[in-house]
Image 1 (cartoon, rainbow over the protein chains, first blue to last red):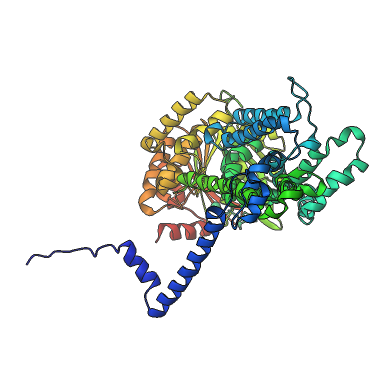
Image 2 (spheres, each protein chain N blue to C red):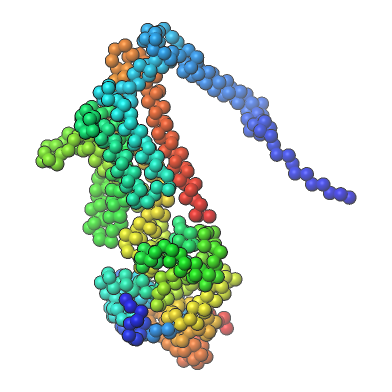
Length: 359
Length: 251
Ligand SMILES: Nc1ncnc2c1ncn2[C@@H]1O[C@H](COP(=O)(O)OP(=O)(O)O)[C@@H](O)[C@H]1O
Ligand SMILES: [Mg+2]
């Protein structure tokens, strides 16, 4: 007799759904109710955001108020304030270019091919330098624009990127000092880290922006913007230092011993053996910390900066567009989403890439 | 350090004392190893074997006594320590390969950043030693993709790429499945035949019989007995040695 072995057919998509959501009458009922609710919400949202929405500025605010849906005209009318804040109108192309330069710099430094000390330094130097020259002007025929007039997305990006550029190396230094063999060094560092972490970011920003000028001599104060960036970098580094230290604890002691036995110096062991593995362990938490920092840039409004959220307030806050705040916040949320989502996806890519060596 | 140094022992240990807190791990240990000599150290677990050889390249700091390696005394002088570590290779029980680098990179990194060799030269050397430990074809893999025996052979190649004058082995086969022990021992036998100065902590008594010039038995932080293998295995007078031998030899 001939034996024919037939594999059971793989369940189709439809059958799979049936099995999951419509197994019993009660389950089917619940599934149907949820489906209806979801469809209703989606329909309402779409209707508000697209079908009944107003997209053009031709009718002005009045046409918007008459319509049942979203008033996207506010974005069309006020996007420049949202993106560039109080930056002089005729010079806003500079602010746009500055944004582009920071974004390009960030994207480039995310590409593994550029991960050598010299290339990264070059990219960061060029990116921040270009941003600074474009925004501040006063050279190359560009009219001068002081830091107090910077705002919107351009300011948010600048604060975020410089916070990370300063905060990350600082975090690694703090993590290494906390691991020091000398008890007084590790204990002092621990105190600093825990001290900073137990303060709210707002109070640190306030101290650096408002209180510090009383304590420092004139020549050391710098502009308020840079003091605020330093404060935010310090805050970032305290949290990130603990993340890096956690990553280092996950590296077996044998790794450093093997490096020592090969004659590597302290910095070679840290730079080539311990940190690369520690950062791999710390990657998910690190990406998380970046995301949190990006969102926390909105707190600088406390000390008088018009980053994107504050610029958004200004965009609808004056007179005629007062009713359209939901649309403005939706737009800003969308911009945040783009940046934060890209950051998380990049983190996932890095994890996959690093997993190659670990099978 | 210079390989053309006038002759003298490769390692001289005099009155070595080592404590971990209140625990006395090494008590007045004396040991001298000539250039080209092969020493096997054995003894029960916790007897201080690892501690002793880790003192030779300063993975552990000693409290008392003197350690002189290739004519240089080990003290707090960091330059001396770095110099000695360049000349003393070490192989660990758990391999300790760098998991984030390929096998080839594992073998190239120290020659490049410690000895400042150009990349091309480091790669040639690395490939030569990978061929010598009989895994040239695994060069582009990551350590995690290799078997234990292969990993340990990479670890040996990695140490050899620094072209050390002395090799230390700390139970190199203890973490391996039985069928992989031979491939690692074969490499070590070849190395011994080429005249490398070797200090091996191991319980592989067959290996000791074959290559050792002297076998050292430790217990309780002391060297209890020291003899050529023939004498050590057949006519040891010491009670503790005989008890230990009957355990590891299984009769
Ligand atoms: N870092 C350490 N701290 C405290 N005690 C240690 C440490 N390392 C080793 N010891 C102790 O020293 C003794 C000798 O250890 P070791 O040299 O590793 O023995 P062996 O290698 O012969 O098994 C053991 O009792 C061990 O518990
Ligand atoms: Mg041991």
